[in-house]
Image (cartoon, rainbow, N blue to C red; front, side, top):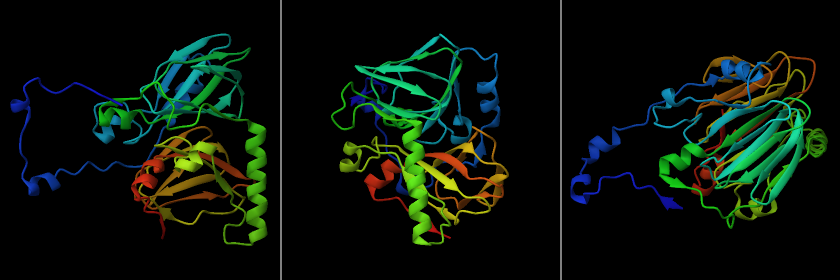
Length: 304
């Protein structure tokens, strides 16, 4: 990591003292759950040009940089057919879900050919170039840029602490979900077949960072007519709706109805649950900053 040089050049003038009582009164502002509906509609506009639509919640978070939660920044990446989009994100890692289209992405020496329903990841600290195929493409992207900004560091161009590029094809994701659902049904547990699994890597399992140090990505499902047991955890969560009709989330007593491919932020520590009143299986992709909490031993998961 490389420290930013943003302090004054005079160390004596930069130094100060804060009384202990005043320090503990400087609590970070709470923020409410929020559904990013306008951003989803902007990204899905057929006339939208190639580029990013950020889910920027910095005003609610009272921070100086773009952020969706204190640790995560999510965005939609639109690519018009035959066009390219290049970025160099100040992140420790980049996670992508393909909402629509097919194309190819390159980062350092890694190349991933992707299509609808795929998940793929790159390490941070280098430029990523996306190229769309014969149709318009839309990706959902999650990074830990706000964490890097808060720490005042930038990711180095090395991957000694993480796996190289990762690719989870849609077919493999479907097989993993089906296997998880069979296991839940066999258990006969209170989950009612509401299966879930976490995206990881061999290196991620060894270091328990799933697959990058700060972030975790999971796929959750809800069978028709079922509800998730209310729970809370210290990590913030971003829930991207993949499938589900007549579904909603309850977050801190407030109902948030699901819309396809819209994202909902759940603040840390708030009691929440997901509910499926439709006729089919509902699926959501969930990104959390729980990698940080796992490392700090502060996950704080509990049921109501």
